Amino acid sequence: MQRLKDERGAVNVVVALLLVPMLAFGAITVDVAAMWAEKQQLQTGADAAALAVAQDCARNDCGPAATTAQSLAEANIDDGEATASIVGPAPSPSSGSVTVQTSGVREHWFAPVLGIDESTITTQATASWGAPTGGTAVLPLAFSWCEFQAQTGGGLPSSTTERTIYFTKSSGTSCTGPSNNLVPGGFGWLTVNAGSCQTTSAIGQVLWSDTGENVPSGCSTADFTAVQGDTVLLPIFDSSGGTGSSAWYRLYGYAAFVVTGYHFVGQYSWSASGTCKGNVRCVQGYFTEFVDLSADFDHGTSAPQLGAAVVSLTS
Image (tube, rainbow, N blue to C red):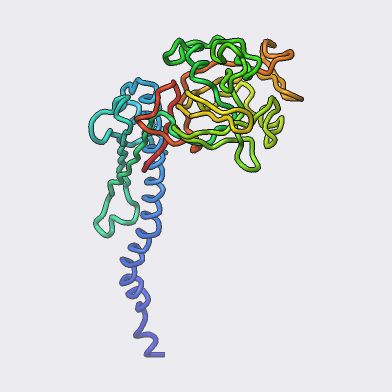
């Protein structure tokens, strides 16, 4: 009993000795976790800011890029305290990319025991933009450069006036030539990817035609229903050749088209205003300016500017 009485208070000594490492482990588990959470928020803000500035630049007006970046950084962090800045020169519509850096200060709960009161966290993101150079269109349609010029006056789309673009043999426009039987027409069907209603292509590529008036066999009514009233990126061809199953189109670029109606063989018929119907096969809508944020298309600075742009995070 005497020995046990002499050892009273030993636990207190051990606890006192272990208190600092215990707080150190608390700093590692709690403070580091809090830093990680804040870094994720700062990264989200940097991503959102870079994409927002890139979208503005893709529309040919970068706006107050620093202000846009700051507002997105603050909106994506819980305490609203974040600083955003543009890395490098101010972006312009022709620069093709922008890098945004975000930073914040994290005050620690346990780390001050180790002499670390706070930490500065920094993240950054880069977004790029440009005209589409290749990708997978949601519909196997190709419009002629002639038809695009006829609708837009040869420049970028600036009108929402609906027009009806007719299938090859029923088109009466000058885009088909005097016989009205040339391959180009207003639009043509393309050979689809296996098991889908989509066609993958790239600028300069020769695309083969899916001949006849029928919708390609890989398509269903649901594929067309899904794009009713939507904006889709579609290939524009500037030359063509061949006949029948050997007909081809050379891809010039991509344009954004708002689908407001269509009328094909079978149950493929829908029109918001009722002008695309009857015995002719047609697509109704208008070309427009559009920024695509999906991963379906690649982009570059040398592709033809037809009103469509693609924006993506690169880092």
